[in-house]
Image (cartoon, rainbow, N blue to C red; front, top):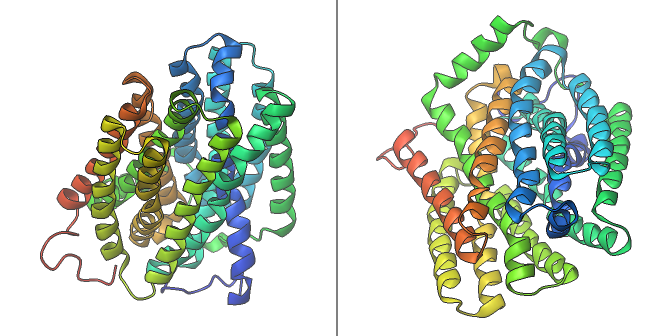
Length: 411
């Protein structure tokens, strides 16, 4: 399908804004499930008698569940279309949210969060695949960047909502709200989301067909490298997410409200960089933006570690350094994902599943290192820097992005 072509099931570019909002709401569900709960993370551990490292696993476990869920749901969406898998996933998200609210101990809560991540993975994988159903290349990168504007509202609003809920109820109530949100989102999908994958473009069912699809993706070295980059980028973000409640609230003494405000400020950086990327991809190839963004983010990450080690600037210094690192994030996953999807549009759901699995899985495996290394500002900064350095190495060694001539196609 040529770039920016539109599937005949959903004609007309005037529907793009509504389409982005709808897909953005879907893609935001996993982020909301993490961010709304975030300010109350220390209270979860205290209430359930668990150390900080186990409380953090309620976040990491959801990411690992999401990674597995996307690998299962992606091929199903290539076979049965986009609507059915996401509706089933949202229904089961509601069920697991209700069970999380009733969890009697930290072990049960971690297990339920793994299941919650598995089921709401349907929302994010379908959102990405539906974009590839309609767009490729720079157009896909632009739409994905617009999607980041909607997704960026999660860190702006969700922690504040979580703090409000915590002030008037308890952490259990967050899951009641998430269940209600899943019901509302399911109703919106049922009424307003058209099917983006026509029957004639669907893939055959069966384990053999699924394995063939994954095999073709994993044999493409450049696809794998590009698909890993959003995961490493998510590891940067999630290392900040799991570490910041302890670093900023326990280390620097911020209240729930102050933490939510500073978390929102960093969310602004993510949104602004995503919108800058959406404008830049009209004139600059995504691979060039990706290359520059990773180098600049690496420089900022080194600065963050220096601030954490020296304590320079106090709370202002650490927040400013975090803002700079996170402000580059909007230029990385969208471009890497668009480049990877462009290589395998015929199995967009399966390709989106691999990207999403790397995104959740790598972040889920890397982010707990913050707690293992001590959970302080130095630990958080070290893990974030390590993920950025790994991203640079993958792009430099596994793709021609930094080689003379690079890719000859306008990617």
